[in-house]
Each structure stands twice: as structure tokens, then as C-alpha cells.
Image (cartoon, rainbow, N blue to C red; front, side, top):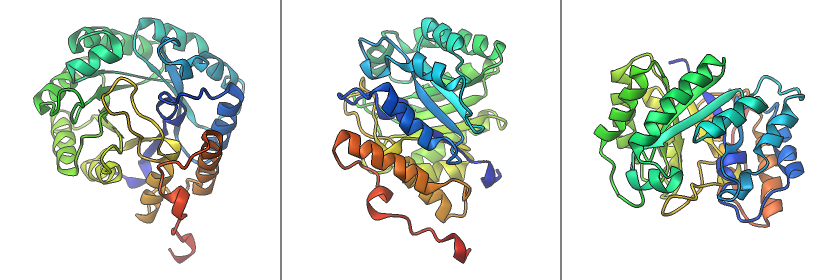
Length: 305
């Protein structure tokens, strides 16, 4: 693995905002996203194509993609989350560049999140992934609740790897393991990602950790050691799945980037731009955000390298 190939995927506009009760106006979202563009972040997830009655914060996702269709994106890939065929069609219509879709390894979470069992969801996600790929789009599939579930507790590794096996059997090789409930711990992260890589050494590994119990960055480091190349995070550490038992924030993008940069990785990312966006988000919601670097400031000194 070449450390300069590490990808940072900003999911703040989607996962960061979906549980917030105060809806963010379209113009404010654009302001934040504009701030992230050009920072060196590789992918920005603008939103999800879900029922606006269930997740009102995502009601303007189509408009966001329409806006950025005519904007210089500075090489940044724009991703969107889809749960079903209708969402996929909406995403294809408005110009999504990378589709994120997946299933939950927890039956309870799957039913609450999508209204389907894991197997029902899988039988629909795989054809959706193939269709998006056939349309020339990037596709990343995920396994949610991969490290545990707030409703069911521990999730057997065999269940997670069984889903991964189905993806790989259908030539879908960009796979993310998502810690939806925040139950992951570093040794488990190394073991599960290691097992996934043994199944197919050519798999593209991505991770998505929540900081529910304070282990988010530690889990990111464990994933990095195992060969994970793509890391999802949210500005200020906002976020959480509204359909899990205890929604909690994502790993903060500023904290993740600062951690990487202290290890000499991704020094090209402009951390101050990310911090500026986090300050704007904090001011909008009128509260302190969970991210640490936003409060403490950076101690990275490029001049000493």
C-alpha cells in the first residue's frame, strides 16, 4: 500500500446532517461544500436519495447535485447514497458520479433502515450496483453494522464475510465496512479487514467509523495498518444513523486529516479550510461540535519536516 494513495471521503453533508433536527438551507449547504472543494479532499457525499418525509434533511439532494453539475469541482468526486432502485434512478438523472449503497449485517437495523431483511436488500443492491457500473459510474458497496449492532449486540464475522462473498462473486470489489453503531475496537477492525483481504487480495477497502465510544480514530489507524485506503468522515464529527439505537457522530474530518498529517500522510490537504467549514457549521447550529482539532488547533508543523 502506498500511503500517498489514501483517500478521504467527506460525508458531512449526508451522514453528518441526517440526524439534525434543524434543517440546513440549500444555500448554507452549498457554502460549506464550496469550502471543502479545493481543500484536497478526494470525495464529497452531497446527500442521500431517500424519502424526504423520513429524512427531511435530505430533501434537497437532487438540487445539490444539479447545482454542482455546472461548477468547477476541482477534481473532487461527488458521491450519493442510494437505498433502492428509485433512489438509483434519481441519482442517475441528476449526475451522481459515485454511488454508495449497501446492506446491514444486522437484521434489526436493516428492517429499521430500509424495511427489508438483509437478504432482501442484498438481492436488490447487487443488480443496482451492476446497473450503476454499466452506466459508467463509480460504485462502492458497504456492509453496515459490520462490527456490532445497538439492537442485537455483537454481529458474527461470518455474517459480514458472507455478504462480502456475495459482492465479490458478482465482481463488486470496492467494499466499505461501516461501524454504524460505533461498537468496533481496533483488534476487531484488523481481524475483519484482514479476513476480507484474504478473500480477495485485490479488493478496494473503505471504512466508516462512528465515535460512539471514543474509538473512532484508533479504529481508523487499525484499518490503515490492514491496508484500508479510503476513509469516510464528517466535518466537526457530526452525524449518526437515525435508525440505529444510539446515533453518534462520525470521526471528525479535521481530526482524521490532522492524525494522518502527523504521520506524514496527505500533507496536501489544506486543514485550515476544513477547520473553517467546521467553524461555520458550529456557528449555524449554535453549539460546540465533537471534533477535537476544532477546539485545540493543529500542532502539525510542515516546516520541520
